[in-house]
Length: 405
Image (cartoon, rainbow, N blue to C red; front, side, top):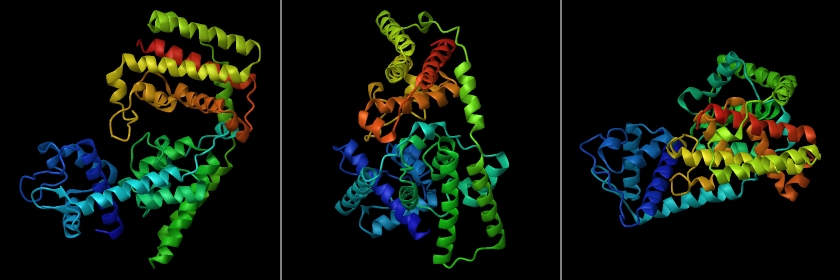
């Protein structure tokens, strides 16, 4: 096993062991009680009460049974654990390393500059690859296995922070899953053409430097593939924003005549509050009070989605996009962000794709409720911006009506 991968899986394993002890402090050990030789990460999941922790490790690292056996033996040799063959008990040394890994992750998140999104950024064309273009890039990056080039989780994180001040391990990029390849695909979907193109070029440069440092020969086929990827990146960068602008105009002109608050099955109290807000929104729009309208629209959408979640708790809590806390448990609905509510509402078929996309635009607009954010980003919405936000709300209400919640 490659040294970097062994160390990475070991760190994740010790961190999960540490988290397990935090969750179950009355059980000061980590005991799998394997049934015979070789039954490690795979079969033990269904045979042992500790299986959920092994499942968590496999989801994060894609570790195989054979690799896990190597990890256990390594941890045993380093005195991180005891009893590598039949059961596992964490030692003080292992606990100490688990704490170090957790602190490193916390510090990494604290030191990451939060990405600032402007209205201009939002209106940029979201990167769209042709099918063959995407296949070529994924082939070059080796994404079929869930990896991206030779990046470890840490170097993958460092790459985006150092080059773009972006935390690729933010929940924003976890829509498709936790692997590096899945996070990169989500990054491509959500970010602008320019940012996506720049990231591809930088990855090619990283690959070239890494090959040089490690004295690895670059074949002619690899060079041809790399050059093709650069060409695709430049094409993505140069594509104009006409499609996005046309889509925006089409959405703005869409009429939602079927929207009826009475059919949303809200409680009487909630229905009255929503109706009051809708009336206030119309007053803001008629009075050209764009910023006030946007804030009211954003909070109204959030209230409606929370109401849907409370009436459909099983669907929302079991969604892949459902947010979890530091303890690994799904958060209470009142603690969900608007981003999470939008993602899960779409995943559970309560709102459509166009509503999801433009709802995220509304979510970003609403972030400017903080004056310092508005000043920093020079965000001055006009009536057209407010009308887009209003149509998002009406479209969401129409979708919720159709879903028969």
